[in-house]
Image 1 (cartoon, helix red, strand yellow):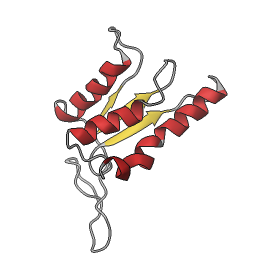
Image 2 (tube, rainbow, N blue to C red):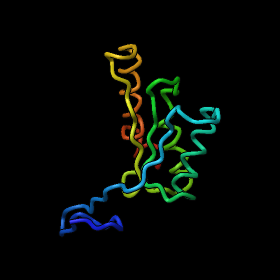
Image 3 (cartoon, rainbow, N blue to C red):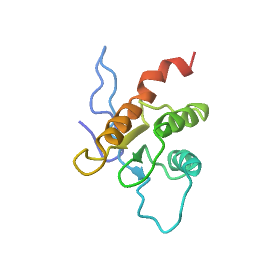
Image 4 (cartoon, one colour):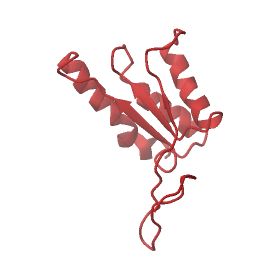
Length: 124
C-alpha cells in the first residue's frame, strides 16, 4: 500500500502510480505577518522547493484570495519544473456557502478547477 516515505500505493502495468501527499503548506489567514497575494504565489513555490511540501492549500475562507491564485501557483510551479498532479498538488479550501457569500463560494470552486482545465494548454 503506502509507507511513511510517500511510496506508491500501487503500481501495475497499465495503472498510474498514485502518491498521497504527506506535508501540506497552508495559506491560512491566521498569521502574524501580512502577506500579499503575489507573495503567496512565491510562498507556494518555496513550500514545494525549500520546505519539502508536496501539497499547497489555497485558502479562500475568511480572506480575499484572488480567484486566479490556483492558476498563478500552477503557472509558477510549471515554470520551475515542479510536476503538479504527479507528486505535487494544489488543494483549495472553499468557503461554506452557509457561512460566506454564496457567489464567492461558487467562484472559488470554479477557480479551483482552472489549473486542471488548463494543465495541458500551458505546456504546449
